[in-house]
Length: 164
Image: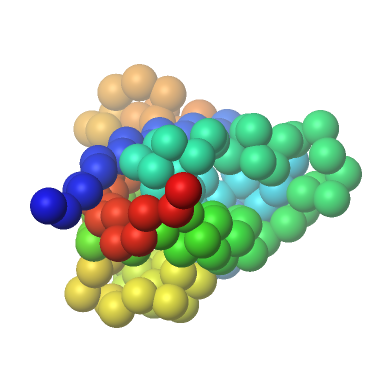
């Protein structure tokens, strides 16, 4: 019997002046960046929370608290790699990741392949297991007004080993 688990992750950060915009580990040219303790990469944060939730291993706030100076300005890809290693040690493998970024601006389609590649490299999985999409919110809500960027992720993992 296989042990499949689904996880959902969500993250949001406010856009502010004076910070680079990092999404999926890609530095994207824009007039503002996301505010946060780490690099504030909402896409990677949503993926990490989805993976951790699927495996019942907590969340990124528990593992990488914003009160810990060790994580100030850290690349979220580094944290994603640590999450992938934690999943492996717990006996899970990633079946697939589906993620969506919600942003009115900038247009993200030119960067989606690089984002997917960064995620697959950090997790040491095949590119066919990761989908990165982007959408606007047609001017509605905080993302539509350009006040912030959000991301959702849904993942499927499989338990391949049971540890006693």
